[in-house]
Structures are given as structure tokens and as C-alpha cells.
Image (cartoon, rainbow, N blue to C red):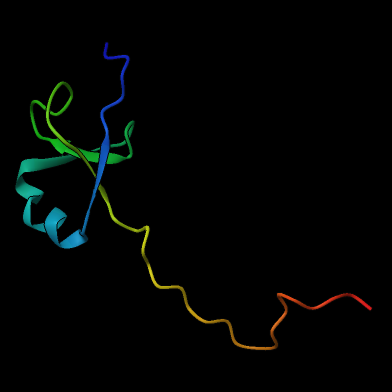
Length: 68
């Protein structure tokens, strides 16, 4: 059993769709690996959700308010 975790590489959902036939989802890694040999070698890919634009909140600004 491998003791050192392979680095996760973040890719866009477009790339995951294009590479879909070559990849399988590994629930234990919460990532995509190569079909067949992905348990031992190859990249570990995750969908890049780190730069998702956040929706602006509607309503009064509350970040710098103080309770009176």
C-alpha cells in the first residue's frame, strides 16, 4: 500500500469531460484516476472549484456593523 499521497491536480470540468473515457471516479480519493492502472500510477485529478465566482448577497451590508 502506498503511504505517500499523490498530488491532486485541479483541472476544469471541460477537461474531465474530454478525458472521461480514460478516467474513473475513485470515491476513496474523491478524485478521478486512470482506468485500470490508476490505483498505482498516473495523475489524480479533481474538478477545479476553487475559483468559483460567489454570488453577491442581497440586503444590508453586515460585515462591519456592531451590535448596539
